[in-house]
Image 1 (cartoon, rainbow, N blue to C red):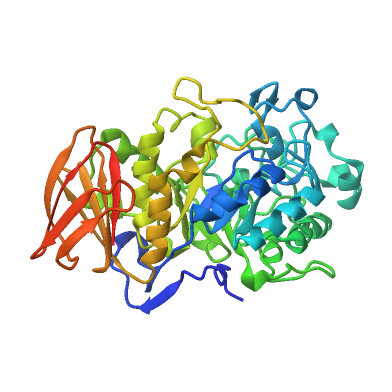
Image 2 (cartoon, rainbow, N blue to C red):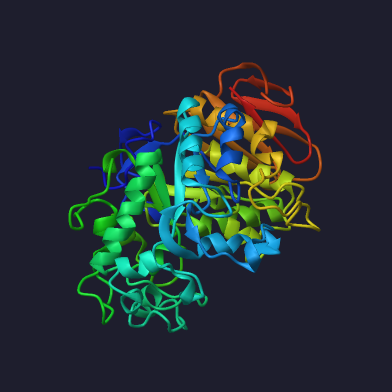
Length: 470
């Protein structure tokens, strides 16, 4: 069993050498990843199935679904992303069975997974075992009975709101944003939940994203009064069985957790169980594309103590887009620039968040219908080109440089290829050092011409454009 469940990521090359990055002192390997994730946020199972051909053609490795379990029905079952219905209702579990009114049925989930397999795509499912709906009376009788009665469903501290997120007892046992905190250490809960997880796998799921993972306690964390031991992660990752159940296909799953970085977050200990999200690096990338300039240090520093091969990266997530609207003001063009940076790099596993169809900077909800496909940015030619570049650069280590006062970023992979990003709103003529062999190159999207001669690359870059040459 591999601790990080990365055996399905065919992109992992191990080149035994010491890491030079300060933020990854414990990482003793240099690796390259070539996987990419499409976050098909709010897409129904049928919508994902019907777009699988385009997803595969765009070069993605994984599709991440929104939560697939039975969820709270809000506003009389309205299906607007925001309004008469809410996207966050599918983040309010009321039972652990496949299918909900927003995304589709169990049979539709199975059909989606079958279509994914046909096109060589793997399915990740968003799961959130540590919360239920705000309305605790909405929890189903089956769920209550399975955990030994409603009185055994939550931590003793589970209805008390967290006031200090850096207090590990509060963080792992208290209510987050009003969402009641489930007693994930209750063996009856674990047994019921793991039946759901194994059913997802049996239906075709290839891995999971654990929502709010840092709110589930580690063995070293304080115990809740209703918990005998913090063993949820050992059970969930298949290290120990619960009754007669253990995690299916545990050696072939890809699992990562939403462990948002903050003070007193035990990210190294969480990383012993699953892959991590690089939330601070996402903030840096958004700063870079907002400022339209950067430095080598900014681009290269993963802002994380965990080995970068184990990190899931993004320019934006559904939380940065929806909650604080931190990233919603960024244009689609800026998102593509950031995507090219994180996807051209040798490490991290980049996740592309699919914004709502028809969304603009003035109307972030766009057509505002849950279940429909997001906008077409996931298959924009620049996005597709860097996805394919990433696969073509398998095994090639990166060299990062910046030019024109940080307005141009160049990420070379060995001497095989380069991603060139003009962050500015102006055309720029570059003369930059390059290890690419001398010759004439044409990029894969814009048919722009690049000339490399005696270690110097020359070209004119259009405003806010990304180029891939190899």
